[in-house]
Amino acid sequence: MDIKLVVFDLDGTLVGAPMNFEEIKERLRGRLEKEGVPKKLIGDLTPMYETLIKISQATGIDFNKLHSFLVELEVERAKESYLFEGSRDLLKLLRKSGIKIALMTRSSRKATEYVLKKHGIEEFFDLVVTRDDVAPEDVKPNPGHLKKILDHFNIPPTKVFVVGDHGYDLIPAKKLGCISVLITSNESGRMSFKVEEEANFEVANVKEAIELFKRLLRTYVVVPAYNEEKTIGDVLEDLLQYFKKEEIVVINDGSKDRTREIAEGKGVVVLNHLVNRGLGGALGTGIRYALLKGAELIITFDADGQHLIEDALRVMKLVAEGKADFAVGSRLKGDISAMPFVKRFGNFVLDFITAIFARKYVTDSQSGLRCLNKECASKIKITCDRYAVSSELIIEASKHGCRIVEVPIKAVYTEYAKKKGTNIIEGVKIAFNLLLDRMR
Image (cartoon, rainbow, N blue to C red):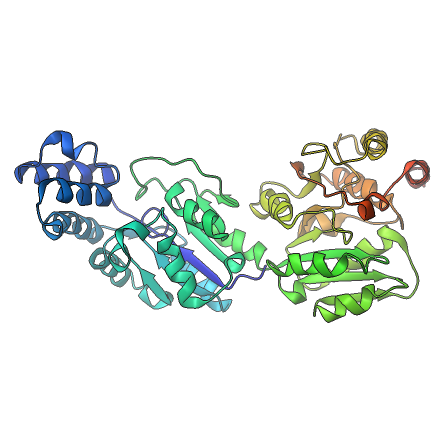
C-alpha cells in the first residue's frame, strides 16, 4: 500500500503506566474539591481536559491553574511509564520504509516530551502535536487535531494511517478519510471510558501491528483486463488512491482496444498477453508476478468498474490481520438490489457446484474481488483458463486448508458491467470444465 504517513496516539498505543486514568481522575477530583469546586460541577470528569474548561468558565477560576493540576498528574504518571513490547521495532520499521511518523496526543506537551525522552523515541517523530498545540475545539476526537498534521505534511488522507487504542483516535481518522488501525488489548494507558467506532484494521497489540504493516507494505493488486478501455482508467485512479503504481498489476489479456495504452498512461505495471487467454490465464500471470515480487498479500480486482475501492479495503482486512488466508467479497451478502436476477440465479447454481468440489459453500464463488496471503496463493495451482478459475481458486484454497472467509460487498452494475462476466452458457461451461478438471 502507498503509506506516506503514520500518525500514532501515545498513551495506550505506544506506552503504558501503572497509574491508570481512573486514578488520575480521583486525584484531580480531590485537588478541585480543595479549590472549592462543587462536586456537581466536577461530575465524573469525562473527559478531564474539556471538563476543566467548563469548570473554569462556570466558576471564574483561572483555567491555567486548573490545568496545571492535570499536567502535574500526567508528568507524575509519565515518570513510571514504559514502552509496550514492539513499539520501538514498529517505529524502526516505518522509518526504514521511508514513511513519515507523527504523534497526536491528548496529553500535555510537558508530559509528552518527558515520555518521549525517557524512552529515547523522540527522534522517530517528524511532528508531535499535543493538546497544548491546538485550540480546545480542535483536540481529538475533533478533526482539527489531525488536520493540523495533514496540513503540515500536505499528504492525501488516503495515504495516511492513524494508529490508536480508542474511539477518540478513530473518529477524526474517519472524518478526514484516513485509514485507521485499532490496538485492542493494551489496557494500560487506555482512556477510562469507551467510544464504539469501527477501524479499518484491528490488532491485539503492537507486535501484531508490526506484522500488519509488513503485509500492507507488500500488497499487490492484480487487475485482469480484456477490452476495458471504457472503465480501466477510472478503476486505476481509484486504486492509485491507496496503492503504489508498482503494486498495481494490469494483465492486458490480448485486448484489441486502448486498454493497454490507458493502463500504461497511468504508470502502473502492465503485463501483456499476445492473445486472449481468458480470466484464468490473466489471473495466473498476475498472481505469479506478484509472488515473484515478494507480495505478502494479493488482491484481485475487476477492471469493469463493478467494485468499490472501499470494499477492497474491507475484503483485505481479515487477511491483513492474519485471521484468514483467503477472503472473498460476497455480493450476495451485501446489497444485491442492483444485481440482475439472471446473475443471481447463475451465481447460486455455480456456488452449489463449487461447494461440491470444494466441500465448502461460498455464497459468491464468482466474485472478482478477493484477497489471498502469500502462503495460500503459493499453494494454488491454476489450470482453468477462463471463468471457471473463480471456482477453481476456492476449490484449490479449500483443498490446501486455507482459511476462507466471506466479506459483504456492494457491486456496481452499470449497463456496461451487466454485459460482462458469467452468463448461463458460461455457467454450463464452468461446470463442465470443473468436472473435467476433477477427473484428471
